[in-house]
Amino acid sequence: MRFTSPFMRLADFDFHLPEDRIALRPADPRDSARLLVVEPGARFADLTVRDLPNQLRAGDVLVVNDTRVIPARLKGVRRRGENVTAVEATLHRRLSGHVWTAFMRPGKRLATGDRIIFGEADDRACFLGALDATVREKGEGGEVTLAFDLAGPDLMAAIAERGVMPLPPYIAAKRTEDARDRDDYQTVYAREEGSVAAPTAGLHFTAELLDQLAAAGVTMERVTLHVGAGTFLPVKSEDLADHRMHPEWGEVDAATAGRLNAARAAGGRLVCVGTTSLRLLESAAGEDGAVRPFSGETAIFITPGYRFRVADGLMTNFHLPKSTLFMLVAAFAGLETMRAAYAHAIEAGYRFYSYGDASLLWRAA
Image (cartoon, helix red, strand yellow):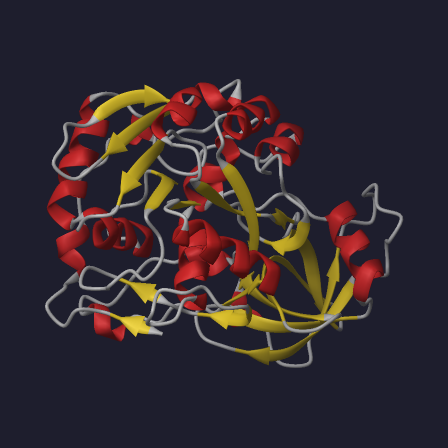
């Protein structure tokens, strides 16, 4: 689905971000991160995530994405006779029990039919010699389709043992992944395995904060959207109508849809934790604003001009200039409002991106 205004250009979503605002580690404890509250007609409020229960009311619903990040970055070699080339794959989208699309480096040097051997001869994995794959197809921009020799739970176990957490490029360029990231880059409520990037707004929650929200009468509903590596790809088209989102698989089951509709009918507000939850709910909602059961792929692209059907609030981190995520928050709270909010956040020392601070946005009228 596409909801791109014909008057929007990529340059409309640019802003200057100093390098020292990029967070390389999360706040500790998680809920000590800062929280910028952006509400139409009100002054910005500088709080912390621990203040969230005071910003919500009984009957409100937090909609969280319970996807679980897999260690989707794999190093290996391509062998052609005596020629050996080191390669790296970032798994992107699961197509079946043994087939994934992946972004490969160096992708141009691969050919259909190539065999890729993941892992090193001296690595710790007990799956040595088993986590091999064949290049089934080549796409654009280094994307390939890999058919693994293993399938199902065996494949996922091998990936878990052999892979590393796929930190976003703006963090990975500054430091290497380490053991801390296995926990830091996972929400406390992660359950459904399949993402290659974290729904990062959820990284701020702790078990204690969830208990406090429940005591305040705020409920939590789980949906699942498996986040792909395409979320980090830059927008290259100056005309946003030419940009294509990578599809991602998501699910809202019938029982959850029913509870969400009942909460709204009773006057509760639906607050999406993360842009992934919001994109999924908006994909599942009908023109009447009712959430319907949904299971499948979505490539919804939201920019200013989109009419939101169901989401009332959005908790989200601070995003890249000229990214589809900044376009989404601009659509939700207003482009000029978000330009001002980001300028305030930069001046006030907020930390940006996946391990950074958070904002709580209320939808513009």
